[in-house]
Each structure stands twice: as structure tokens, then as C-alpha cells.
Length: 343
Length: 270
Image (tube, rainbow over all chains, first blue to last red):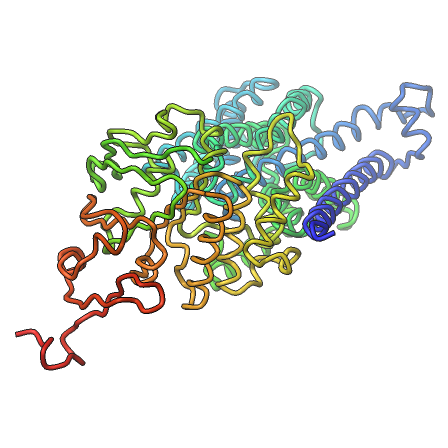
């Protein structure tokens, strides 16, 4: 029974990873249901279920469910999944917790493109989602190209990305200040990120993207167990390193871009989800599913706090996640420098 | 039986800079080859080139007569493993998980983790004496333990050819000997072809079946340590006078360096 140690250790680690995934799924479903049922107009659980199944419900329930709360809960869960997964892929590929799409200018690319489409060209609807996606892809490619020097190094990629992000944020602010006050107020969601008042027209493209890209990311993500050990060992294991990295980054950029198009750059969700999931699972495994679920839970919980728990005023979800994420960023910058890690 | 490994007019470099030029070398099958040379002589670059971690600028590496760059990388990974310098362990990873990564190439679309994989990992841990550490996080281990765990990871890949880039760096002398003994065990038990880039000359002379001495990206001499070494070769390659004496333990050459100080009358520089 000597081989038992290895098998037992592996079993224990897999079991914990599975348990965390199941517990997070339960949490996401619970928060999703709570978002549907709780509010100024309370809807009982049986009515929530009845309304979802299209059965008759008391007056007003269907309207509140289908026009207000279901879109809100759906976009929260979907954007959270997409941001969480995108962030974890970036961080694990570049082996740096700072390398998430909202820190290095990919989300800002989507934001700027969406704001330009909305305010400069006055176009709305599905075009904005397409523009956001294009913006994310273009900014990612620019960062990739500018940081390319015989391969892409982690730190250079991040520094270039932060620079590009700052430029894009300035452009967004400039456009907003030059625009009509009323339109600009509507476009404010692009600065903070909000899941309030989203329409199905904005949610469906994100849902389609999540349904297609999450399985693709999880399948491609299998190379991460090799890539985590560095490019040399990944190559030694037979992984096509440059191709795999490029493909995974494109998938992650699409996820982040689509989520930003639908809900704005909800601050720090991509950035926090991966590390939280890694802490929950323990060990050194790549955690993608868990990070996606943490992302969904973060957005659902933050939106619940922002809309119900902070007094009579409602705060957009991005304000709440920003308040949670900023101290974490500072802590990470402080400790990463001290221990010389994170690069 | 491990496959035959050979460099054929292999040139390697980074960008414009050529580091290894027109190298022809046959790595004796089933033997321990150790490559030595001064810093920046291209020995690590050559090893990386042999393992296709670096593309060939010209020439090729032949594995069983076939170009390694034309063979699917996964197929090569079943035959040839390498432990490069300075590998990265993910934060918090356990010894078992890290060594399991050596089984990466044996996993596939249709082949999940099996008890064969458990056995390969267990054997690699046993061979390196790290089985008692199996459940521990790698971050908590000492430098010597960590190095043995990395070697275990390379062993778990179960390749007929194993390349090791400075596997004794940062280890104290007892662990250096331990690592080289371990590699020799593996070579004797499994007939593995081993190629090591090593800094410690006296240990290299002792453990090498086949010694390769490199300078400026080319081979100066290669063969059995007893045949190819001389005080003149060391002076030419390392730019240092020395006395070669017999290692009383292994009957191989042993270097006694001669500097400017602490030197007896007869050996003083004029």
C-alpha cells in the first residue's frame, strides 16, 4: 500500500477542488434566486419558480421578474462568470496576479470602443456589443505586439498593458466630457460597471459567448498544468506553447470584451476571482471553473449589497466591487514587492 | 531501449547571436554523458537545443535518425525528457501534484489519470527518496529536497533519454553526490541515456561515462575522462593552471587548481 500516498494526496486535492466548485455553484444559484425574489416588491419563492416556468402568478410579478430582475440577475451571473474565467486565464498564463484584463487595459479597450460607438456615432444595441468585443481584441493585440520581444514576457506585458489602459481611460473621459450631459449620464455605466436596466438585447450576445467560450476555455485550459511550470517545461511536455498561449488569451479577451459590452468594466472582478478561487481550492492546481463561479458570486453579492444594504440610495455594482478590490490591489502590490514574487 | 540521439551540424543562437556553431555529436545510448565548460561556452544552449526548447538556426537534432523538429512534439516528449534550469513551481503546489505534472504527455483527450500514472509518480518519488514528502507543499522544502522533487518530476515522464541542466546548482556537496548517484542508479537500472550539464568538474570527471568539454560553442574534446583530460586541456579551456591528480576513490582525474597565492615554490608563476 505504498502507492497509496500519491493516490490519496491526489484524491484529497481533487475532492477539495470538486467540493469548492459545488459549494460555489450552490452559492451562485442561491444568490441568483435571492436577487429574483428580494426587493421593494417581495416575490415568494414559489412565485419565482412559477413565473420562470411561465405559469400564472399574482399581478405585477411577471413584469418585475421578466423585465427587471431576471435580466439583472442573468447579466450579473454571466458577466461574473466571464470576468472570473478571463481573469484566471490571464493570471495563470502570465504567471502574475496583476495580469488580469481589467488591470492591463483589455476591459478599457472594450469600454472605449463602446463609448465611442454610443456617444460619437450614436449607435445602440447589438453594434455596441460588437464594438466592445472589437475594442478588447484590438487593445489586446496592441499590447501583445508592443510587448513582443522574442516571445511575450510577463512583466513587460503588464506594464505595457497598464500604460495602454491609462491612455484608453483618458480617451473615454474626454469623450464623456465632450458629450451631451443627458447621453453622458447614460454612458456613465461604462465608467463604473452596472447590471441595472440591462435589456435582453444586451444580455443575449453575452449569454451566447459564455455558452460557446466557457467550454472552449476549459478544454484549451488543460495545457495550463504544463504551462504553469514555465515555457521550457511545457515545451518539454509536448505543449505547443506559443499557439496555446495565443489561443487562450484570445478566448479570455473575448470573454472580458463581451462582459464589458454588456455590463461595463465591473471593477476588479476579473482581478480578484482567480486568487480567491486558488485560495479556496488550495494547492497549485489551475482553477478555471472555480474562478468563473467566484466571479459570478462576487457580482451577484456585490450587486445585492449595492442595491439593498447601503441605505436608500442604490449604488452600481462596480462601486461595490471597487471598494472590495482596491485594498486587495494595494495589499498585492505591497507584498509582491516585499517578497520579490509576483513576477 | 532508449532511442539514439545525435546533433548533426547543429547551430543554435538567440536572434543574431550564434552561440553553438556546426556541432556534430553522438550522445552514447544508455550511457551518462556529462558536458562541462566555462561560463557562456554554450553548454546549456546546446542542451536546450537537443531538447527542442530552442529552434535550430541550422542543422538538426536527430532522434532515432529523424529530425526532432519535424517530429510531433508530443511524440518527442514520450522519448526525451529535460529538467531545465530554474523551473517554476506554482505557489502552494504539493510534491505529489508537481511530480504528477511529469505525466502530462501521458494524458490526452481520451486518456485520463490512471493507476499507471499513480505508480509512475510513486516510483519516481521512491527513487529520489521523496515519498515521505508526497503530501507536503513544495514551498516548505529545503533546496536539496526541492531539487530531488524536480528530478522526480522529470523521472515520472519515463523517457528513455533524460537531459539535466545543472541539476546540482545550489546544493551542498552531500546533495550533489546524492543527485549524481541517483542519476547513475537510474542509468544502471533502466539503461536510460543521461546527458548532464555540470559545473562541478571533479564530480563530472567521476560520474561521466562520456565527457564532453566545450569552449566558445564548440567541442574541444570528448571521450572517457581518463583518455581526454590533461593539464593542457584544462589550461586551454578554463584559462587556469592546474595539477591533475588521481581521484583515489574512483580512479578518475581530479583537478587541483593553481592560483597566484597559497602555492608552493615549484608552482609559483614566474
